[in-house]
Image (cartoon, rainbow, N blue to C red; front, side, top):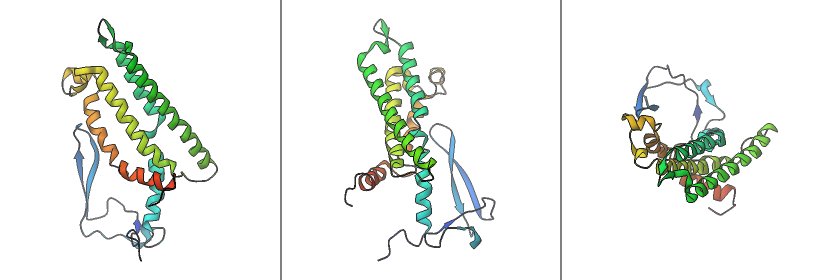
Length: 215
């Protein structure tokens, strides 16, 4: 029985090819992150085929491994900077005669996020060692995409809690602009759990390819 993904072929396209029309999509944060792309009677030369005919899903999966490995959500430097912003805001925000950073529960929460970031960092070191030996990213790349995304959500939620009501100010307001787009970013970041493969799909792949659980 033929599997559903068999029959897919992978082609490279010149985006100036006649019939390709691009329409920008502006998301809730008023930024243009991606587009709708329309193909109207587009002809692609057979020389643009990548890999074998009907084996495009194999090529796509290899590319997705690298995409997930390089996911900004799973980048420990980016995660670390986001945590530093939480700590800075907590030290500058007044609360109960002191500052928000005086709250031991918040500090415990921040330490947990820093420990999780270190786990991602050292797992990335192992993957980088494999790549340096000429191998490709393994199934741990799915962890960077999934767990990094969830960790980023936790960091942004913590930042909003630290800022209090200021954390929900939109950045077209003076206060919102001062807060560095925290509210708007927190809305847009939810899409990271969908693009490049949903979090649910990532968990299924981790269960199968890392934990060895049955289908």
